[in-house]
Length: 208
Image (cartoon, rainbow, N blue to C red; front, top):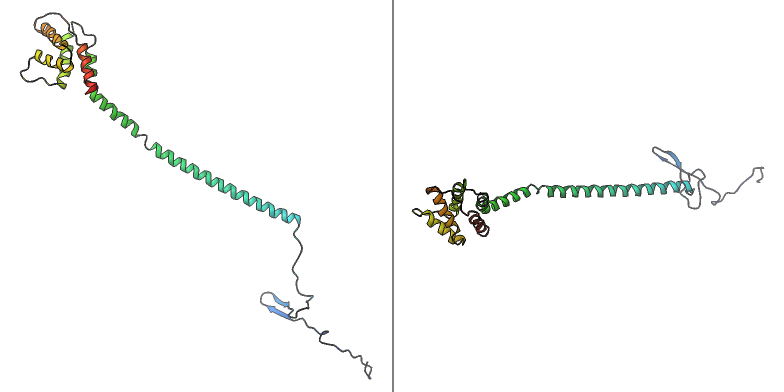
């Protein structure tokens, strides 16, 4: 206390301090502490509250749900891709099936072309009677003539001998020809062996 009764206090630099404020547009005046070692009681502080078990559980549940969703999406994408690939493969395979009947048909026609003369000859040589013998002989002769053309001026018997030599029939067709001439020009009701000729002709068709 001084002589006039006034209290006097001595303030050192360690006792004097001021808290400035800084203006931020949109926020207003905010306390600002530039001096190390001092804290402004008006300054906002960060919350250091540790996360609760409920928050951790929610985060874990969210992470698990996200993982499951990603796994489900991946499986769905894989399944869809697999179905698409199988569908493409099935489409590619089914696109070639139309060739099968064509190949089978061509093969059958080729086989029929090679064998039809012999097959028809076998059919005509069955159930030969005295009534239909002349007709069946002429039909068989027509089939043989498609394979071996009868020469101009060649007699029917000479042609029959040539067929016997080719088919190695030992005179069977020649004998059938004589019987045909006897029935045709002599009026005799006879039959000849046509089935053996047709069978030999069919065997020839198989191997040539």
